[in-house]
Length: 63
Image: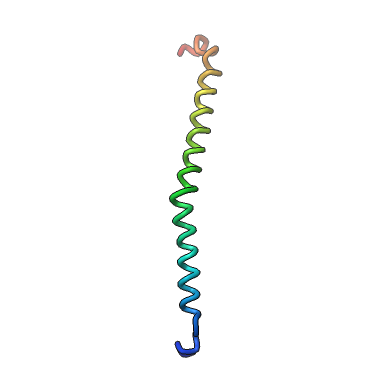
């Protein structure tokens, strides 16, 4: 297959690759930090609730 026979394929492929790359950049800059932040807050709230729940047992365990 000669390059002349390819037509617009390389341009289409490059455009498609650029679109996919933009989506990944968007994911990195917008979605990933939001997911990490949500997980952090879920863990923080869980830790606080667990700490409060363990307070009545503190004298028993010697803490």
